[in-house]
Length: 408
Image 1 (cartoon, rainbow, N blue to C red):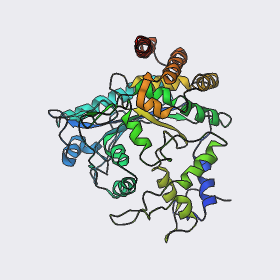
Image 2 (image 1 turned 30 degrees about the horizontal axis):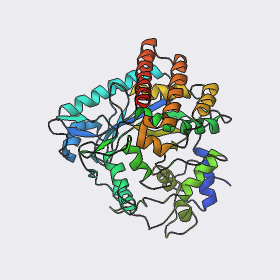
Image 3 (image 1 turned 90 degrees about the vertical axis):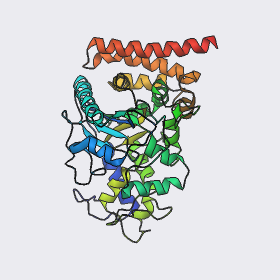
């Protein structure tokens, strides 16, 4: 099968052709050397965080840095250190860093861009939230663009979680190289296997819209409920690239882009169906690339690994999950060991989301990855003081929950 190179407008003529294309691009092979982050936050009025933020307020605050989804004629300039600002459907702001080969350089430049973002918001009396879900307001879609209208139409037909995920949640996403060809399957497995323990360690979204939810990570719970099973963890059997391609074909098409304002997709249409001719207009490779951007599992294959399962973190601790995950994925031996020590908790995603570190198996795995990851941080190009701060914070979290369990 020949896949058209560099021609986004070429027609995808069959499901088999689409699967072959996805499998060929989803994991790019090479030495794992680069790291990036995408950090999201809810946005609030400084004086009254429960009051909605108006589109015009947010657009004025971001100015030339606003994305076109918020301000159609914006220049969309990056922040001073290269991070681009985007806005999620409910008005959450996100900064996306360029990839870095230096961990310390990534941390320092993103810190500077966070300060720049805060200065923009502060001038409009706006502030960032510091948890993975809006603790004050119900979901309300701020961006009135065809993509999000079509997505919400599909999600609303499945239940209330889609609106919450789109409009009320915020995550800290870590982007890692997929690795050499022989290591991809192991790194893909490890990024998921440590997931429940990482979720529990950094869960902070237990309060939503003024109420306690009973979930440590209400953000992850709502994400899983948005469009199951495609927003849930995948099975790990066989070739990851082939499995990812199959998932992409089976997932519903959320948007069919047209010239007008309505991008609603035909009910029940999957991309595999579309590629096999079950829609009036055949898809292009550009449509397929766009479809891949509407998949929301815990880890997304984008040529690299986009880890999406972490709650947004406060400014003073956003380094912690980035450094821990980077250390756990820093070399093949550590990756193998991370899989071993999380074997008993690897499928306890909902337990981690509901109970956090109060789940015994998840707590045990979290303790193990903290010990393993903190010992491996010395291999990263960060100073010992930073490693000590992260280690102390994470060990204290583990100790506090262990003590609580023993005293219960």
